[in-house]
Structures are given as structure tokens and as C-alpha cells.
Length: 386
Ligand SMILES: *[C@@H]1O[C@H](CO)[C@@H](O)[C@H](O)[C@H]1NC(C)=O
Ligand SMILES: *[C@@H]1O[C@H](CO)[C@@H](O)[C@H](O)[C@H]1NC(C)=O
Ligand SMILES: *[C@@H]1O[C@H](CO)[C@@H](O)[C@H](O)[C@H]1NC(C)=O
Image 1 (cartoon, rainbow, N blue to C red):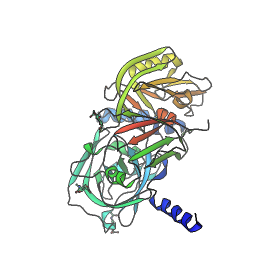
Image 2: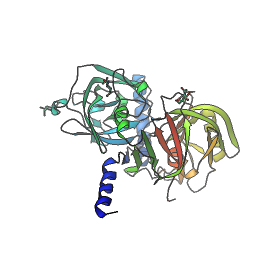
Image 3: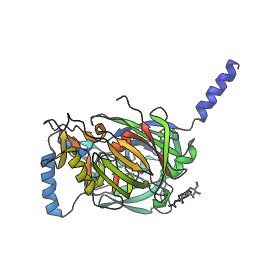
Image 4: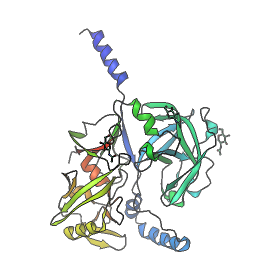
């Protein structure tokens, strides 16, 4: 082949490659962060006082951390750190005119939040339709509009999004500027096109691969989200797909669980929660894990702990008849308790739907492929150096 022809094909492959890989930034798990910094006990006490005052019980511990994607909205490319959320479908960001405390910044860290100012964008359009979506026991509400959006290597016009003028109190603790829903259009605000609906047709393949690294919780980059391609560099080629419970949520079934001599065989609904640092398991399973690992309850921090130095048994999770292994290094985490103890990264659930909330421990062990095109989720052994 002539050099010129080779060059032509090289250029062609560059211009036609419709996929991109972005580092996953992650907000720190707030609970872990506060324990590390020795201020969790104080926080719990102030929280308790506030609960007594307001009667409001925050869902603080369940989804207290996020994967963040950087997006740019509008003609002046206003920048936002938005949380990737598998449980909702629309995009929303904080509005410059938001008056809620949660829009102002994170008091404990002094982090200011980015807010969207539609006067700074000549491509903004809104007919004034309002929106209101549930979020952590409260509601996020504001105005729907459209504007241009830049995400990774892709840029498009007229993306529907909400700019929030009211957010719940709990949002005050969270260093994010909005939510990017990874859910299906079935759960979108009626009459809107979701970000994934717009993005997927532009990609080589309508899917996202998520690979996550094991870190000590202080690192800024935790892995990669690869849009439009299965990531064979970080994940084994041997990928198994699992049907979704109802084809329009990222839920599927767990059939069985085993740790040491404890096992449970039961078909239960699991949610892929790629932003949850801790793994939610039915309460009875949590008791089984505690027994098998001889964990003790740490009353100060409200968590179960085991000595960091001991190796705990593997966990086996059966999904669609296939066993998946989670090693203890992925579920025992060092959160700087300073007494040689590490945390068991599990919490108990009481709900049936979902009974399992499969967070980081599972994602670190197996790459996740969110396959929108075929409405299925794929798992492949994650490649790691350890
Ligand atoms: C929004 O942007 C406009 C144009 O730059 C500016 O005049 C206005 O003060 C901004 N609004 C707020 C609340 O900062
Ligand atoms: C959604 O996108 C489709 C295809 O681009 C378009 O025809 C439709 O009008 C859009 N719907 C809304 C509510 O913007
Ligand atoms: C999901 O979609 C697949 C393929 O289109 C179909 O075979 C399956 O029955 C659907 N499942 C549900 C619960 O609708």
C-alpha cells in the first residue's frame, strides 16, 4: 500500500471512530471522608439533633458518593460536574437563580457549586415548562429548557435539560452541580429527549463500559467510562450479558449468594448502582456476612469492622446461573479508623425492589457494560495489576 493510502486509512479511522474514554472522577464517599478526617461522630450528632428538630430522616448513607462527568452547556460552555446516575433519566443542573442552601456550596469543604446562567447562552431556549423530580426524599424543581451540550468528544444542539431553582436540603452535603441520568427514556420527564437518547445514535455502539480501580478513597480518578465501545484494554474479552428485569431500568436478578458456610438461594431484584461505594444486601445476608467474617460493630461510626490484616473469604454471587467472585480486598476497605480495623463495605436493605444494590465492590471485580441498544447489562472480569 502506498504511504499516501495508509495515511488516508489512518485518517479515516480517526474521523470515524465514534467512541471516547473519560476518566471517572469521583466525589469522595462522604461518610468515609468524615471518618478519615475524624469528624463523623460530630456530624452524626448534629444530624441527629436536626432530625429531632425537623422530623426528617435523610437517606444519607445509601448513595453518598458519585461518579462525576464533566459536561459543558450553552454557547459560552459553562462547566458542570454532574453525577452519573443509573436510576434516573434526565439531565439537570443547578440554576444561577436557585435560592436553596443546597445550591450555594458545600459548607464543610468550602467548595462552591457551578450554576447555569441562561443569559450567558445565546443558544438557550425554554418555553417556561416547569419540572419536578424526586431526589433523596425531597424534590428537585425548576425550568426545562434546551441548549447545546458538550460531553467528551461529542457536541450537539437542543439537548433537553432542567435548571433547578429548588433542591432538597440533603444536597448541601454533596459536591455535585447536577445529575446526568443514565436511565432509559421510559422514565424520562414526558416530552423530553434524554442525553443518552441523543448520544447513543452518534456512537459506534450504543453502550457504555465502566471499569473501576481499587483506591484508598483519596484518589481523584477512579476508573474509566468508555462511551460507544467495549473496553478490552481494562476488561477481559469474555463478557456475559444478563437480561434486564423489565428492559427499562438497570435492574436484574441475583439468584444466590455465598460466603464461607453461609449461603442463600433466592431470586431477588438487584440494581446496578455504579455510584454506590457500599453494597446493599438483604439484612439477613448482612448477618451472614458478619458471622462469617467475625466482624464487630463499631458503635461510634455505625459500621461493621474486621482487622485489616486478616484475609476474608471470597463472596460468590450467582447471576443468571453464573457465579461471580468478589474478593475481600474489594469489600473490606481501609477508612483510616486508626485501630487496625477496616470497614466491611456493606449495608443492610429491607426493600424487595431492589433487595441488592450492587456498588463498587462488584464493579471493581467486574467491568459493567450498560448496553442500551440491546437493553441488557454485561459483566466481564476487570483487569487489575493486583
Ligand atoms: C447572568 O449572566 C448575565 C449576563 O452575563 C449577568 O448580567 C447576570 O448578572 C448573571 N446573573 C447572575 C444571577 O449572576
Ligand atoms: C426528540 O427527538 C426526536 C428525534 O430527533 C424529535 O423528533 C422529537 O421532536 C424530540 N422530542 C422532543 C420532545 O424534543
Ligand atoms: C426485553 O427485550 C427482549 C428483547 O427484545 C425480549 O425478548 C424480552 O422479553 C423483554 N423482556 C421484558 C421483561 O419485557
